[in-house]
Image (tube, rainbow, N blue to C red; front, side, top):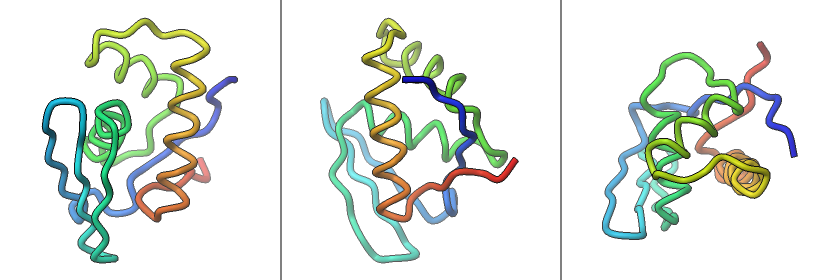
Amino acid sequence: MTLTHRWRAIDREAIHLRVWDAECVAYDELSGNTHLLSSFAGEALAQLCREPAPRCAALLALDVAAQLALERDASLDQALAACLDEFERLGLAKRSAD
Protein backbone atom coordinates (compact mmCIF):
# COMPACT_ATOMS: atom_id res chain seq x y z
CA MET A 1 0.00 0.00 0.00
CA THR A 2 1.34 3.41 -0.86
CA LEU A 3 1.01 6.41 1.36
CA THR A 4 0.14 9.31 -0.91
CA HIS A 5 -1.86 11.73 1.22
CA ARG A 6 -0.75 14.52 3.51
CA TRP A 7 -2.14 14.43 7.05
CA ARG A 8 -2.43 16.78 10.00
CA ALA A 9 -3.75 16.60 13.53
CA ILE A 10 -7.18 18.23 13.83
CA ASP A 11 -5.92 20.42 16.70
CA ARG A 12 -2.44 19.49 17.82
CA GLU A 13 -2.71 21.64 20.95
CA ALA A 14 -5.87 19.82 22.08
CA ILE A 15 -4.41 16.30 21.91
CA HIS A 16 -2.52 15.18 25.01
CA LEU A 17 -0.47 11.98 24.85
CA ARG A 18 0.92 9.81 27.65
CA VAL A 19 3.04 6.75 26.90
CA TRP A 20 3.60 3.68 29.07
CA ASP A 21 5.62 0.74 27.74
CA ALA A 22 3.68 -0.62 24.74
CA GLU A 23 0.61 1.59 25.14
CA CYS A 24 -0.31 5.21 24.68
CA VAL A 25 -3.31 7.17 25.88
CA ALA A 26 -4.52 10.12 23.85
CA TYR A 27 -6.91 12.62 25.41
CA ASP A 28 -8.76 14.86 22.95
CA GLU A 29 -9.80 18.11 24.66
CA LEU A 30 -12.17 19.01 21.83
CA SER A 31 -14.32 15.89 22.12
CA GLY A 32 -13.52 14.92 25.70
CA ASN A 33 -12.66 11.41 24.47
CA THR A 34 -9.74 9.32 25.65
CA HIS A 35 -8.24 6.73 23.31
CA LEU A 36 -6.02 3.77 24.15
CA LEU A 37 -3.45 3.36 21.35
CA SER A 38 -0.60 1.01 20.63
CA SER A 39 2.89 2.46 20.92
CA PHE A 40 3.02 2.48 17.09
CA ALA A 41 -0.23 4.45 16.76
CA GLY A 42 0.82 6.72 19.62
CA GLU A 43 4.09 7.55 17.88
CA ALA A 44 2.30 8.24 14.60
CA LEU A 45 -0.10 10.63 16.36
CA ALA A 46 2.75 12.24 18.29
CA GLN A 47 4.58 12.87 15.03
CA LEU A 48 1.47 14.54 13.57
CA CYS A 49 1.07 16.69 16.68
CA ARG A 50 4.68 17.91 16.53
CA GLU A 51 4.25 19.59 13.15
CA PRO A 52 1.88 22.48 12.42
CA ALA A 53 1.95 21.78 8.67
CA PRO A 54 0.41 18.70 7.05
CA ARG A 55 2.80 15.73 6.91
CA CYS A 56 3.40 13.56 3.88
CA ALA A 57 2.34 10.05 4.94
CA ALA A 58 5.37 8.44 3.28
CA LEU A 59 7.75 10.67 5.27
CA LEU A 60 5.68 10.10 8.39
CA ALA A 61 6.23 6.35 7.90
CA LEU A 62 9.99 6.91 7.76
CA ASP A 63 9.93 9.01 10.95
CA VAL A 64 7.78 6.51 12.87
CA ALA A 65 10.00 3.62 11.75
CA ALA A 66 13.14 5.48 12.79
CA GLN A 67 11.74 6.50 16.19
CA LEU A 68 10.62 2.95 17.00
CA ALA A 69 13.67 1.27 15.42
CA LEU A 70 11.53 -0.59 12.90
CA GLU A 71 12.20 -1.38 9.27
CA ARG A 72 10.02 0.51 6.86
CA ASP A 73 8.34 -2.02 4.63
CA ALA A 74 4.91 -2.75 3.16
CA SER A 75 3.54 -4.04 6.47
CA LEU A 76 4.59 -0.86 8.28
CA ASP A 77 3.00 1.23 5.53
CA GLN A 78 -0.23 -0.78 5.86
CA ALA A 79 -0.22 -0.38 9.63
CA LEU A 80 0.33 3.36 9.33
CA ALA A 81 -2.40 3.72 6.70
CA ALA A 82 -4.80 1.89 9.05
CA CYS A 83 -3.79 4.18 11.93
CA LEU A 84 -4.33 7.30 9.86
CA ASP A 85 -7.75 6.10 8.73
CA GLU A 86 -8.65 5.36 12.35
CA PHE A 87 -7.40 8.78 13.48
CA GLU A 88 -9.64 10.34 10.83
CA ARG A 89 -12.62 8.27 12.00
CA LEU A 90 -11.95 9.32 15.62
CA GLY A 91 -11.62 12.99 14.68
CA LEU A 92 -7.95 13.20 15.70
CA ALA A 93 -6.46 13.80 12.23
CA LYS A 94 -7.54 14.53 8.72
CA ARG A 95 -6.26 14.35 5.18
CA SER A 96 -5.02 17.67 3.94
CA ALA A 97 -6.29 19.19 0.70
CA ASP A 98 -2.76 20.17 -0.39
